[in-house]
Image (cartoon, rainbow, N blue to C red; front, side):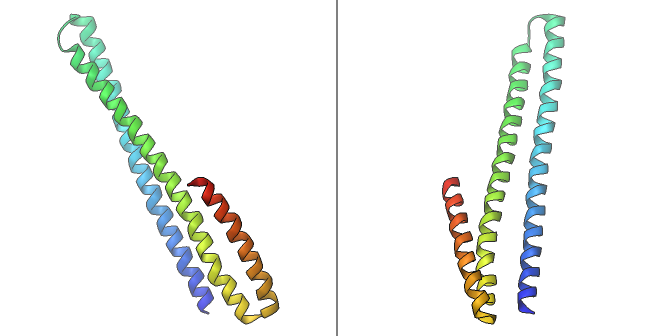
Length: 135
């Protein structure tokens, strides 16, 4: 019964973490979209003023449009970094979750448990190598 409870707790934590990460990413992508929209609007206003007057506050408008575009690029880069970090954290959590399952199996049925422990060591070794490359 405790193994089922542990699995349910891990699943709940995984769903909660994934949902929170997706919400953060969506908020940052939304901010990037709004910044891009603002850049387009300011660019159009600047183009209008260029055609209308050919002098004046054009330089300020173009600088502002460029600044909003840079902000959008930074926000998209931040969202991609958070997505990468969350993916890496999920792999670490799966590797940590495998150890208690293997130990519980080892305690119940020694022959199957030994095979499971060897399998867990192999999986942990492979995950450790793949995580080591990501660092």
